[in-house]
Picture 1 (cartoon, rainbow, N blue to C red):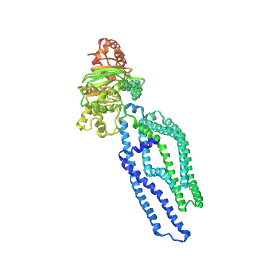
Picture 2: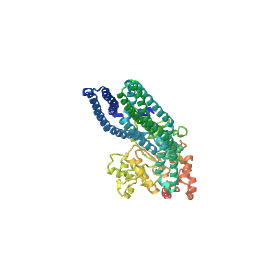
Picture 3: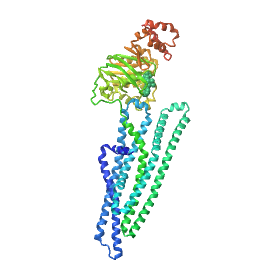
Picture 4: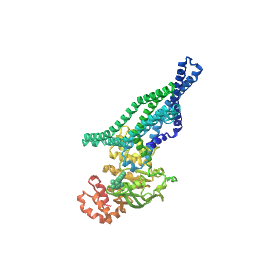
Length: 618
Ligand code: ADP
Ligand code: MG
């Protein structure tokens, strides 16, 4: 807990100097707060000493005390103004700065981290963690720092004024301190689970909000709300005992105010009767007592606050401490522009460290080749290409580009060389223009038009009310799947990389559009090393080489004719996938492998038959 506390103060980072000044101002405030009762007591002593004797107190006797008091008063005001002016601003500035750091860090975390952690949780941790720190800084500088000084430094000092009363104060403060520590210990675990429920709540809610269409069409609104209520109930069940303990602590501290003042007063009176103290000292200590109890209340409130916030900040620091596994080596090379030669050497990768997603994959690609990757879903195709643009690094084996291991390049320079059209065409909830500029920040209007044109997306643009400036909604949801895919292809084309990855980039397109796009893609692929994951014949047929994946392994490789002729898995797959449903051509199909020819036709794209006819006639 204490470590977190120090770490949060450490987050003041570049503004530590201002922090130190504020702490000094607080120190001064604490000292001044102690000086006032002391001066007050002294003045009373001067007045009472002269009271019985009939000698009037003289101004020269009182003046220094009064002036001192005025002096402290003025300093208190000045230090107070300084703190008030700067503490809040500092806390606000740092909150936003730390938030920006977190944001940047979260973006560098590996894809594997983000697939395992819900974005709702990542966001919640960011907002809660930073607002927790903000509260901590604020209360630290506004009062907490002064309270610590008062309790730990000045309290022992009171023993020097009058040891009996001083000791009594120390004992009382220790007692209440122990009480707080006890409550803290009692509730610490519970509060941790409260925070986990809070995160669950955020995750559940944002998950539901991201899937509203599903919830509505499956009439799950009630179920979802009930699910949320269950989490809320568990949260409250954990939270309420914590609150009760803290209520007890607060009440005890408050009751102690009266108790402390009363006992100081009684002890003081007894000492006075023994001639061991003066009226002035009793007055001084009574104000000390009230003040210290006030401080103690603040500290208890503060400890309570940190304690409630600690799990949030702990979660925050956990994220900050997660090191991206994929990161630059200190002496990383600039990849400049790669030629596109790629080798995979015995590459294996597993997401969970148990089940391999890619197993012992090796292949070489020369610049400009088109490699088609086929295989049933879940066979490791996307993962293999993810390894190529270092979404993750292989656990064993290595991948090289232009003869240099990928890990020896700087990440940025490597990724500038690789254009990826993801399986799920992820778009930003911004305008189409902004989405395209992601590919090339300084793209001109013509370049964008050309890219859209090559991606067969000009038709989409014609339908948009604001053209390039049309907003596309969260993840591009105002566009259809095929439209999103074409925009994301255009985005990758603008990047103009020597290596292109198309991960089922055309899966959401209808056959006519795909056939058109295919021609464009053929042209785009020329002069680039292209990896294309596809299920459709047209794409695969034109590839220089086909890699057939099965359970993470490359089980066959070769060009279309070779693979079909060999009659292996690809031939079987091809028959099942491309030719099923064409009963009329069953005989032709049966004959096809032997002849190295093939008729293409799938369930969902009958319009491909002209193409199929063309192919079977080759
Ligand atoms: P494909 O693209 O061939 O359909 P993937 O490469 O996406 O297959 O997946 C290969 C295997 O790895 C699958 O079994 C899949 O369940 C698993 N997998 C994919 N992504 C993740 C992930 N982020 N975390 C854990 N397992 C994953
Ligand atoms: Mg995939």
